[in-house]
Length: 89
Image (cartoon, rainbow, N blue to C red; front, side):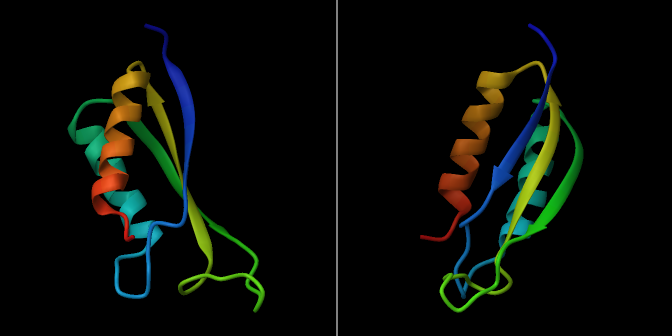
């Protein structure tokens, strides 16, 4: 299988009582590497618009993992499962 360079964006994973999106993104990065599904090259935080008309939990930021993988389908399955199990409702 060909090696792929992916950007995986994450947002809307938290509420006022849960861990934040950045934390979940970092933990997901550990899961990806622990399962040998890719190499995390970096994680970036992205500041989104903070405005009274835009609902958000604390700072209105999203996160992105930069991953190199040869296992796209398995990586996708892990990401979906991890976020379903760990994101706030």
